[in-house]
Length: 167
Image 1: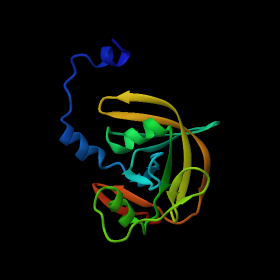
Image 2: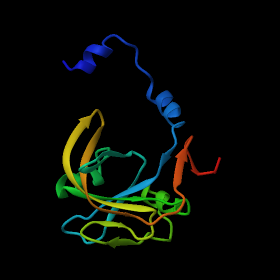
Image 3: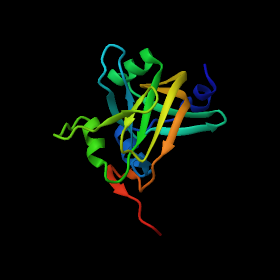
Image 4: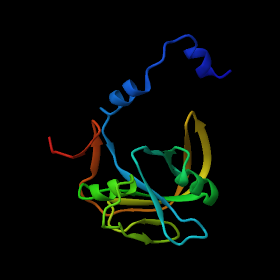
């Protein structure tokens, strides 16, 4: 039994639908996680909002991924890219969320890992650990290369795309 089990024993749970509606009030950036299957040169991507900086020394991030193609690729290859989207890249987010439009986003392989060519910022990462949390895996990864190209970010808030407005 873990500490979490002891602390939460007997407490009522929150319904997943209610939780989703509530957590949607936390604004997040939008990113694409990408990877290449060794036998297929075409980059694969998936839209995420669960991207977090963990440590500056060494530079470490995490992404939260449900089981599926991207989970299998990252588990198999041991590395992935993250492309942070700018406010004009809502189409990229929709494309990698499954709404395939006619315009295919273009990847660039700057070092080893594909990231989107015109993204706001990019990270090339090597997996250092995996943590299973219920129906997701947290992939903790060391940032091997990164850069920021600048510009306003694409945000996701209250289940809609949003942009930053100056106060």
